[in-house]
Length: 273
Length: 93
Image: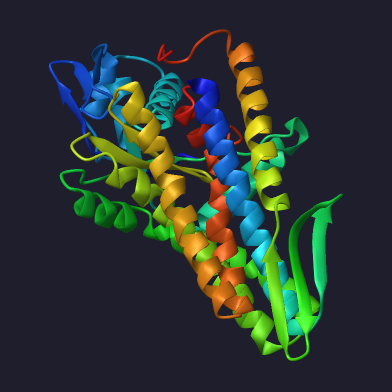
């Protein structure tokens, strides 16, 4: 959801020069019309202010200007070219989201999530891993918390003891860390390639400049391979030491092996599909 | 080339998953002090035999069979997806 009180910023690697919107990650640029330039020259300002200025300068009704601005920002945000800087309380936003979700429910749809694009340092493999983990930390924590919340009641039903509870929390944490490591694996293999981490709804992915087919396959495989190897190591260690909890914690990591098949986008990319 | 890649990735993926699942079952059975045999037909995936105070865990040829089956299914799925996509994706082959 984008509100009138929100602001927009050009995403990392995106610039506005001579009425052209250029994206260093995609290696593309797009020409803009006058109103597009007008809007993007005002990044950082509240959208309702931009709408009023656009209506005034281009002499269009306020509701038409509002529709145009929001549609333009929506399109650019969906392409991960601008980030939306949200304002207002989280509670108010949650209430607005719920209200919109209820209105959309008869159509079987949910409000479109906002896209967030974050910078990645691909100058070196270590820098790439560090920047990827930094960029995905909020997502890792969110997934870990959500997984633990889902697993804890199950643990209580199955075991009812503290051991199962702590195992559920550990599984949740492993699930979250697995996602962070997955993206870090991709980024580590993208040394020297302009890249950005994109968060859109429940999706997390690395957007990068075009590379050759062989390297594309390697990049696609690197993410799941890192996590799968970690999971395999934990399973082997747990099995060797007869430690069931270590084996169980290794399972969410090992499950990333599924991404290597054509079920996952990485597997399809690796197979050139 | 694409089929080979799909087969290799599918084999590795299903092999890893099958091994991890089998190891979890085996360690669980060991911790509970039970015997266990998991397999299909004559192909044993994993077995845990209790002998006096010790437990012997064996990963059988069923694991390899599962992995190869996974590779074949992945190739079939890749071909299906490719056909639906209407041609070659990256021009590698």
